[in-house]
Image 1: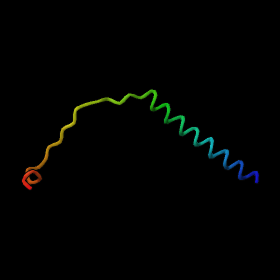
Image 2: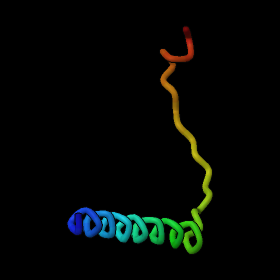
Image 3: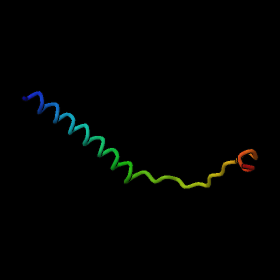
Image 4: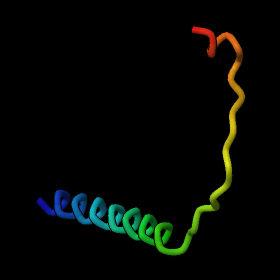
Length: 47
């Protein structure tokens, strides 16, 4: 049974690290907005 508790503790710690990293990205990283354009071939427009 102690190995189960150790496994669950490791999984919980790793999950907390991942959650904390995602929170840090959401809080501190601001995405850049820019215009986007894409050319379409004429064959796609004549359907």
